[in-house]
Amino acid sequence: MLLGTDQALAWVSAARAGLVGARGRIDAVNVFPVADADTGTNAWLTVEGGARAVDDLLASPGGPPDAEAALAAFARGAMLAARGNSGVILSQWLAGFVRRARRDEDGPARVLADALRDAARAARLALADPQEGTVLTLADEVAEAAGLAADAGAPTEQAVAHAAAAGHRALARISATHPVLRRAHVPDAGACALLVVVDALVAAVTREPARDPALWLPERTVPRARDADGDLPGAGHGDGGAFEVMLVVQAPRADLGDHLREGLAAVGDSVAVVGADGWWHAHVHTDEPVAAIDACAAGAREQVVVRRLDVVDAAVGPRPDGWGLVVVTASPGLAAWYATAGAVVVVRCPELPVRAEHVRRAVEDARDESGRAVLVVPGGAVAGDELDLLLGIDGVEVLGADDEARAAVATLAFVTAATSAAAAAALATARARVAALEPDASVAELGPTVDGLVRAVPDRLADLPDRLAGALTDGALPVPESLTVVVPGPLDELLAAQVERVAAQHGLEPTVLADASATRVLVAVD
Image 1 (tube, one colour):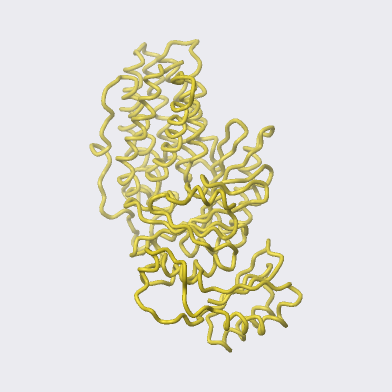
Image 2 (tube, helix red, strand yellow):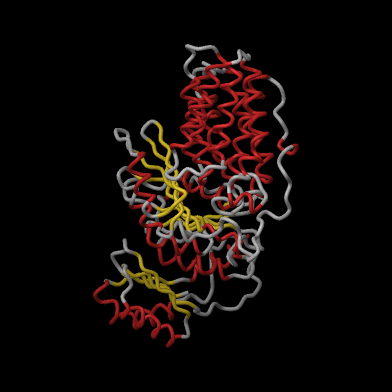
């Protein structure tokens, strides 16, 4: 094995600490493939997932793991925790490195060079459309430098230090060959993240402190440069999509790599697929989240997350009151609507349940660097025992919205509240009244149903958590304001027109959502 146990654990620790310190600076230079200022955060969360897997291994019975077990856990944990295109690439780079580092038939410097070469190849193979001038090119430069050093007879410590130094020298040069990066005058953010991990490897091998990212990463107060027309370089979604879809696919006896890449490439871009031990992590930018989720149906799908890529620049971006939003839904067709409202969306597929760890992962994605509070809207798609595991997590509020209609009502209240968004969502959920209609009777029964729901809206609220109830500033009795109807998709024009007429009769603001997985019409009055 290339690394000893102490060195392997030191690498994990140094990579984790390095990305914690560098994430803000890396986020600030993120303009490609989408200028959403999250590459540093995604790389950190990816490596953090790997580090937690190693923590779990260290805490298990049987004594400390050997280097091979520790690094295998690091790579697999990073793969399952990977965030965004950059995180998927980084996790595959780690997997390629670890696979080759297990072999010791050659001298250690040659094993190091071969491991870096295999890591670079693995990262490139993860993508359906590899782009030069990015982290992929940098990985090649690092591997080539290590190979030259090994050929010259350098010891391992010198070879890894030479490889890292070559990567730092190449960063500006290779970034300048990419048109988006050249126009924005920034290095590739994914390449910066990889250099932090390589510097951590140098520190582990040489037993010297890791290079401080603050010494080489620029500090920018403006996270994204705009072109002459005021547009964000790389921010357009015309060739890819407005949504990011990430999911894990279980297929123990199948090699799904090419199948998933081809299917996702047909519905979007920035496709990255990595796999290990029967697990596949897929990533795509797309305008069609449903099509992307369907393209991965060859195995058991879980940890399905949908986010809107341009929310950071929209009016629904980070709220001034500091709350983030996570919505869980059993309807892939509603995921785009929730994501456009600013939520990190967890989608339950039929094959596997949503677990508490999936929601916790989404909570991490919904927090900003200040660790803001997050409201979780379960939408009836999370089992009660899994929800119980979320209770008591600092900064997390779980709402009692147990169906799609209440989840939609809560989301609307959250995004339209000027302040106290979580309190507004809890208030709307508590006072909402929901009825279910059979599709063939919905048009005739909609009017009388809404009449009854309007009369049933309570004149006072009870059982709100104190910290949410305390955020309400007036004691006025609630007056019905909105009508939300979730219909089995596709949307029927006759029903949509009837919803608008009934809403107008009661002075309600209508919202009609099409849910292809629904079997009944849900009607909610808030």
